[in-house]
Length: 181
Image (cartoon, rainbow, N blue to C red):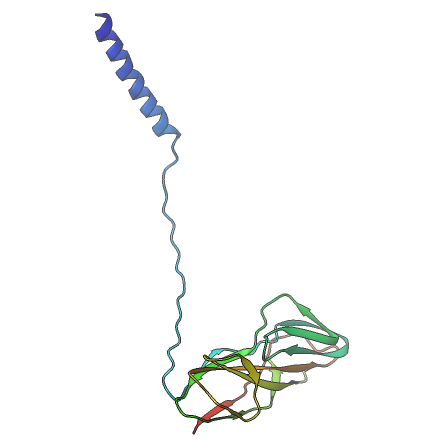
């Protein structure tokens, strides 16, 4: 009888242990969220914009100043009464490909930025172009580049910010033209 009573007590203890562990476990929940995946496909003799030129968030001081986005490095610098705030700036980027020996690059050399909703003087940015190819480094562009593979074109520039420029979102458009010869 002693052996049989021990087996019953052990089985009861196991049952109580399992019940206690089950009570201590929190219910499982599943969580999910969506991500974004992007790709850029470039066909021969095409040009695709992959990023816009963004001077970022700025504070206009009591004296005028400038903000510059370097076309080669993408770095941002400011001078005068303009103060940068946070990140969120970038050079514009375009990708193209041409299997030909010579490419002519042209387009806007400046852009006017106007305030959404009006009520403020526009600002002007002078633009600088740079390019790289899949076979080499980045260089500033004059009018012509000899390609080898996929070309990446970068647009930077210097935005002149007047003293006490009213707050708001400013934007403008510019053109990049690539002729494959």
